[in-house]
Length: 215
Image (cartoon, rainbow, N blue to C red; front, side, top):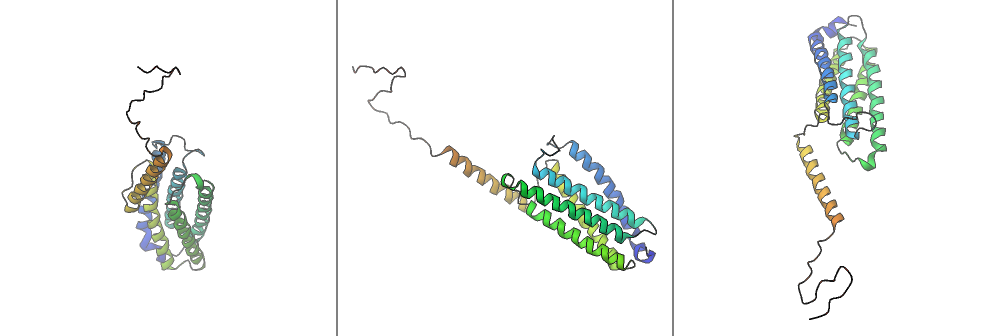
């Protein structure tokens, strides 16, 4: 490791390691208080993806930050390994989503999964560059930027895991569209309202099947 390339980021990576470790602990607390008591294979698809996203990104930031603080270690090698794990996890989430897609149409999964794949691909390319040029200040800065990007992603996924409502415009619009689709489906199931029986001289049929003589 080249000290000149990492000296300016020592305090930054130290703070990131502290924050990542704390958030990982809070993540386990969030899982324990989650409204979904079943956190295994029978958990909702959205919960599985959110949990996988949060733990993968936080673990990535924690390990990268700790390795960057260790003198004499190779950050490029750690970045390549973690990027490979992240890509593998992203592929797994994509497979789970496609397998359960007919019954779980979560539009946000179409965004978060490819976005994570792109971020891990960038980390892999950056890690390879660090292996070739360990003293590259730009590559170290790129790793620091990726760590910064992973934090809000993990926090947002943990926020959804505990059942909190999102306040983003896309979330509100998605909820509105889902409510309208549910209302339309309920209306189609119930069918048109039945017309009231007009009042007249004809008497209602006797439930016993016997006809009453006319007066």
